[in-house]
Length: 57
Image (cartoon, rainbow, N blue to C red):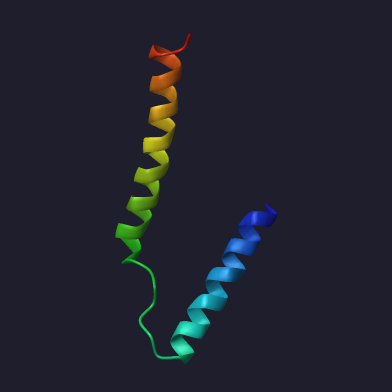
């Protein structure tokens, strides 16, 4: 839980700093970003499942 709160605070601070400096936010569009994160996580879980199911010695 501590990691989640620290990640949120870090993201908020970075967002404020970028807006103060009038820079574009360093994030993809909301839906594309969320789908990318879900895809990366799902790929890792799928790889673990496949390797444990089919290649376990």
